[in-house]
Image (tube, rainbow, N blue to C red):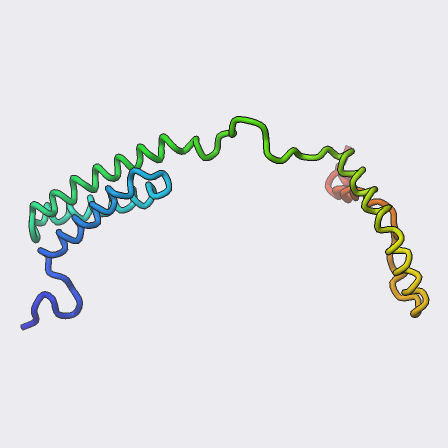
Amino acid sequence: MATPTEGGAAPAGKLAWVWLGLAVAALLSSWNPFAAPAGLVLGLASGALGLLAARRRRGNRLAATAALALGAVAAVVSGLVLALTAGAVTSELPGEPVIRPRSAAEASTLLDAARSASDPARQRARRELDAAGGAGRETAKDDEPLEPVAPPPDPEEEDEPE
């Protein structure tokens, strides 16, 4: 006859203590906003497993009831911590921004300055390419500033009957 511990299965009495340990882990992780999701999942799991063990009267009922109670407390505390700190992550921070965004005019001015600063090197490279055989003259807009391309017309809008 096989014993309850053969085949890797733990006896029912020891599982209640495992679920109690799971509930304690859930309770310990329920106070921290970053660990509260794990505390919520562990608390719900240990509470459900403790309830199942207490209803079936398998193993140590005191440990199963304690797992149910601690798991429920951990799930409630984790849910409360998540609810109270959810807005803290997405809210606007007070004070001046660290990085000020550039306007389109400022960005254009900076790009023009960079283009004029690199112009001698680009001209020299173009002369060297021309001397080497003319490779590299495929560019359509040599040094013109980049302009946004207009989107193609929508074919559905053109073919509408009036």
